[in-house]
Amino acid sequence: MPSAMKAKIRETALALIKATPEGIRYKDLHQAVCGRLLDVAPNTIASELHSLRHMLPPGSVVKGLYRHINSEP
View 1 (cartoon, rainbow, N blue to C red):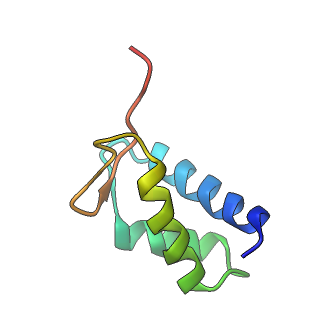
View 2: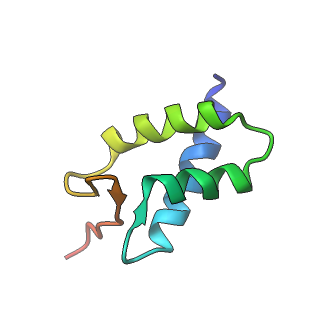
């Protein structure tokens, strides 16, 4: 998968996570990213969301709930 596509998926997912302060479930995040990136296969998005989860700060993803954790004090 081209790195530009990966970056596009990550940017879209992070924007959605930041826009949902109460958190967003994986299923809803996946559907929202798929709805915004119609030219990307759903399985590709799922794969990148899995990778993204390991890049986020600890506590950002708990039991399928993705939350934005502000790193500023």
